[in-house]
Image 1 (spheres, rainbow, N blue to C red):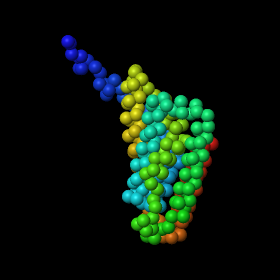
Image 2 (spheres, rainbow, N blue to C red):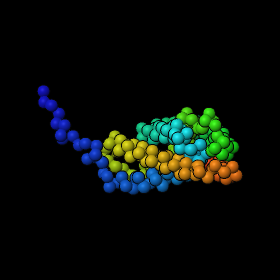
Image 3 (cartoon, rainbow, N blue to C red):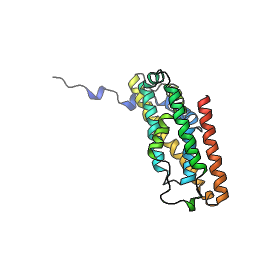
Image 4 (cartoon, rainbow, N blue to C red):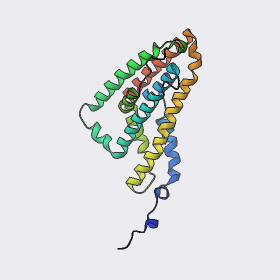
Length: 213
């Protein structure tokens, strides 16, 4: 029996139109990387709890956002959003969690006063927000449809998932790092209250904009 000519089968890398990858990445940076519930919450968590204690939350948000990406890539998004009331449920659930998180951040004590056992945002909370974040569904769907990287649907989707997953990781780490750089300012009680309150307000504002649009 003749063996298949594996050399003749084009590799994924060879089948991808890499010239189209640049615009896709720039689009993802502008749309997915802009302020929103997930990104602002990471900045707020990093500033209020520090980089190390926010790591689990970072992993959760990243994993949740990647789940949304996979749903978009597989076409599940259209089916899910066609379910009556599901979009409203996602919005209400994410808004409720955001309000709770904003309260926790606004009332977080200055870093030196925080006890080791003080509860920082969890992996589960981050995963929930990543999946329920209304901006993520809209932004990722828009970026995913903005360009075509290959002639076949499977190759195109695979390449986009790989590139956009890397962008999700980069974007989320960047926003958390920005927040963590504010941490030294939070050792003064007055500055801590002002910055945490401002970040909490920004988190609520970003969520409101995501829901309205």
